[in-house]
Length: 408
Image (cartoon, rainbow, N blue to C red; front, side):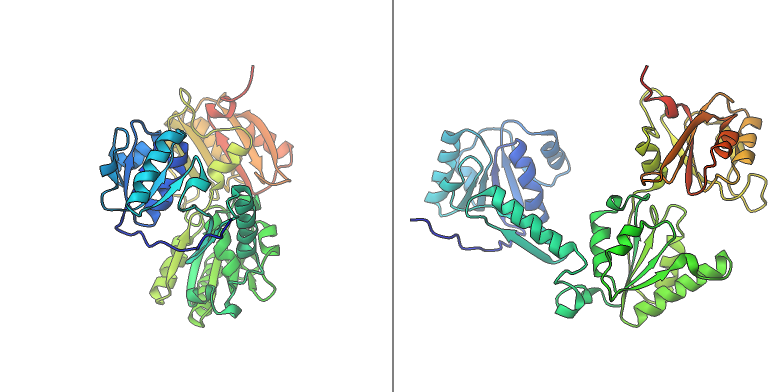
């Protein structure tokens, strides 16, 4: 007669867990065991490269041989991750004799324990056991994860279980280069917990559309004054809202620390005693070229890439970019916020010896439906971009990588 399993959360920190097998299944199981703090013993003649990396880093102990009963000495749990049913049965027989729960990848119904499909949301872990059907478990898990990550999550503050733990804090979250799906999972989850969102102009609009109706949205692009005064006002908003007990997400295009003034905002919060979490974002300097088939590095073509801001012309007294040195480099040059000053930038690079025939490209609004791209050369890219009517935001790429993936 079929009986339901008894669900239980194991606290494995410092406790021995034995994993038998070094293949794909073990590769998937080991990270969660390490995350739980388990003392992992891995027994297998061979390992995948990913498991070998854990061994090399000293995160687990490896016995490069076949299983022997003594391997279960002191164990609290064993995972059998081999395809050989005879070998797996031998391990689970030893485990049963010693009253150690045993998970089997080859035959879940012959196991004494099952691994559930899991989703994690901060301190909340949801584990789903689908009656032994892994497909049902994963489908249910995915539905629960979508609920927890969404704007109507039951972990919102009114439930008393969710984001109130972040009250009085600020998160600097990188929203990515433009495609709303390129925000990191952690950034997306924090956004769903926010009381206040202070958003840049380049933040994907669809991310804002998913906010809960009671979230206060501050459009940072509409804050008056000049750049310095506007930044002071943003800093003030972050500190004031957090000091009043709100969880504030400062949502920034790309990465908070790549020409995003994230450091200034962190310092302002720190000076006011407001805790800050920084969530890196996918920077447009790499993602936008990649979206049009341009790798910023490529074996045999470029072993370096440099990212610079072009918002100031090369002859501007406040410019801190050594354009002469950049002209002498052989690698890839990625210029952000440089479309307006592109004629002066290219002229300076040419004047300091960069080959006029160097391939160049400009990508407008990369990773979005409005993406446009032109390919040119260093000598002609400024005129070609103007002729095509390209407008900011745009990323300029200079270097042989522009044509590295062209097919003959």
